[in-house]
Length: 285
Length: 255
Image (tube, rainbow over all chains, first blue to last red; front, side, top):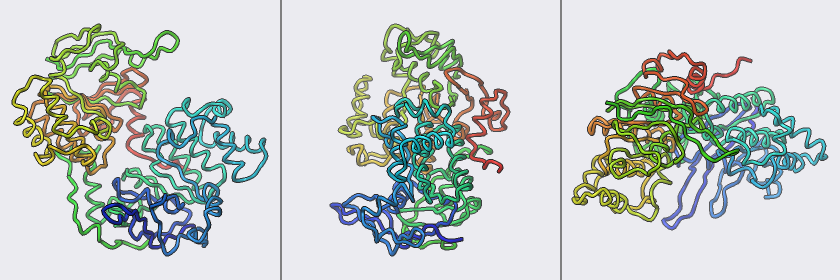
């Protein structure tokens, strides 16, 4: 398998009044045309890793790495103008909450066709046709009506599917999905996951799936990276997540209530300062 | 005696053409000392039932009884009501006043409920929720999400209520912190003999916390079941079935 993405020794740093804060500390991984899950608690650096790949960390934050290669090209060597060609067109990102990522004063149709025309420079009619097609692909009923509608007329689940449609219009090679289903109901969640699943399988797209939901990642992804305090503490195959070795991963898994077996008390995670310094366990991804 | 008794509850928002019937004909009883769960998708009306009970959704009909005392529809809730019923909200980042210290939050509630030994009570409340007096003069931004939710629980416990309404109390928290808060709630319930009415979209959490569960869909109750029936997937309504299956995770479509 050729590597779609190759990240080596990624650091994200923020200067603060109390000195430098490292949000991501030396993360390395490779991604083929597969589903890679990144899990961890809030503050573990998983979202920052996703943003850093697209160089979306705002100043004064700094991104440093040996390299971030997309199909062999180092994204760190690109100018800001060249990066804009990468964003959206080759790597897309779906954020957690559609309420904050859709433009409230543009109709859905305008936003979708804009996404197409910016990246493909196609005609208006072609853009419209593609937009409707993508809405159908993400299982939106009555796409013609939705094209005319505004974001506030959409439910959360529809908004999220529209976001995914918009991100997929330029046909990216890699999709970074940051908690794409956390704001959704379980039934809608299933639909959204199926759509992404199909796109990975049909188009051979790479997917980075950032989530705090361990069970979901174990079921949905091919591989999982577990992050703690800005580091990858463990990498494993997703279906073997429940056999994970690292005490942090074990602690997270054990703190989940179980549906099949009643428990009197839930296990509480006891943090070990050594985890923050621990090297990567398991095979290097 | 039932702690809470809802009979033919309807709740609506808006008037005329814009009227939305958020809850329609909901009836259920929560026994004293029981932990009762309301589950369903967003928009199914589960939180609206809590809001009607606490007087936050003023347009309702039907009967609500709290400890066998019927609520008056026209009037607001009196102090006796808020002394027996308290609520913990979903988002601990939004439910605490950013400019008030833990001490101010708690002492205001205690004062309003007519307690005079406020000092001693604040210390005890903070001990109860596992924070300790070191946290007394902190502001919300100096606390983590889990610590904030502990403060919110302490605030709800201050009037010594017998019924605690929990609206998605751990949805905004990490799983590791969720475990701590759920353990805390279980301990407090055992210590103080509390009745819980809990709303959540997470069926696994509800299964852990509750003895009885009601499933809601589009404002109506579709099924009531015991936790053992739910764990064994012994449900009759197709919607409860699909909700259970969906919440147990993602199964890759057969391709």
